[in-house]
Length: 392
Image 1 (cartoon, one colour):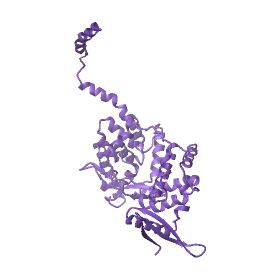
Image 2 (spheres, one colour):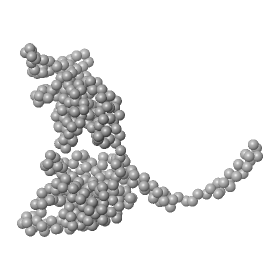
Image 3 (spheres, helix red, strand yellow):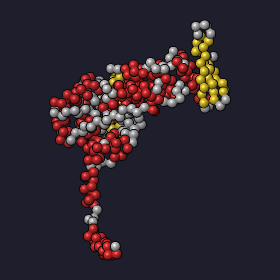
Image 4 (cartoon, one colour):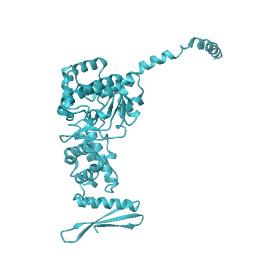
């Protein structure tokens, strides 16, 4: 047996055999876990798994670099999506380890972290450095849970505050220009559906014909998404329960998709095969998935040619939400259509639009309220004020 647990006062002590030392004797590592015996057993299992993978280092000699890599392999890989793992790994290997990896974990102090943020902000945006802070803080929070640290030093650090980027939304006039420019573009159906439904790019590219019903329910079901990871397009389930949703269509979008489906069915008949429910709605050549990078590049090139500067594909989603708000749609309805976790988040993202609607709201309120009667009030107050003046 390579490890065991024994009672130690009100806690549990873990003893693990970590191999033989230079003198041939067994080396032992001890940890104390407070709580139930099951908590200690869980920690023992984690250590033994790390030993089997060859990534375990006793906490006393653990460096920040070793801890970050252990956290990636032991926690992030098993609890997060591959896309999230790739993003965290890039931040850790390119930024955090070069700057802070040489510190022993227990000797990492807030001043060192704060100093790194200051230097990083000279070359990187505040938003990028803030994201690095989140990754570092999550990893150190894990170290606290594992008993490697008594407190997360990131809690004593002030990360840079990212500035909100001004949101680019298209006016009805600009939207007309965009759709006119896209009319002969191979990806026009994607663009029109995006601005008519508010779906994310990955959600649009993952749509199958079984997810689209322009006839009976006039709705789109989001049940899978398409991401590109390490050069390969992959299908996966939506990230959250809120993202897995049903979105209602406008009558114009339903009519457009009915016509588009008929065209696709005719094309497939020419190719000698039927259009199946599991076929993708939007495809590239030979029915293959559309590369997200190619779609974004095509959109940027088209909008620039149409004279619409600084418009991203994702701005079609923002345009959908802003037009819904300006037309009086209820925030909860918009939040559900966008797949947001809460109405509060939706309102925060589009707060600038709501502020611009205050004048219109006040004008509507003015139509409902009766006019004031200040003249009558002043007539009643005049005798009272006169008597007070005489007395004084």
